[in-house]
Length: 81
Image (cartoon, rainbow, N blue to C red; front, side, top):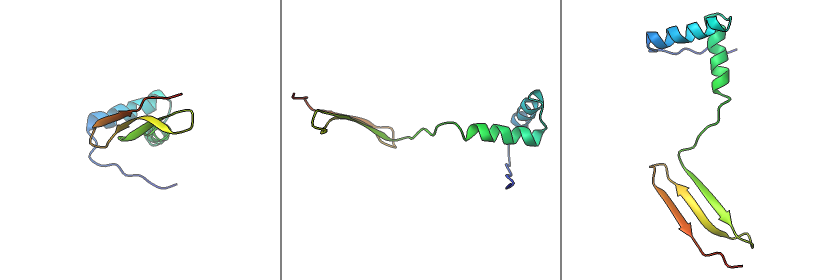
């Protein structure tokens, strides 16, 4: 298993992580490994996305887009049935 070295962690953060590990009945090393294992299970939230809404012939008739700089744009086309 590879080693992971984390530097410059504030002492109160390191102490809180150690306390969490002890409360779970683990030593610090196993507690940190458990916390990292839980972190990688969380979803990754993208900073940009596009939501497309499709019409009856599978054409895109609406979309909402968020760019990496935080700008949000949208386009609405009338839906003709």
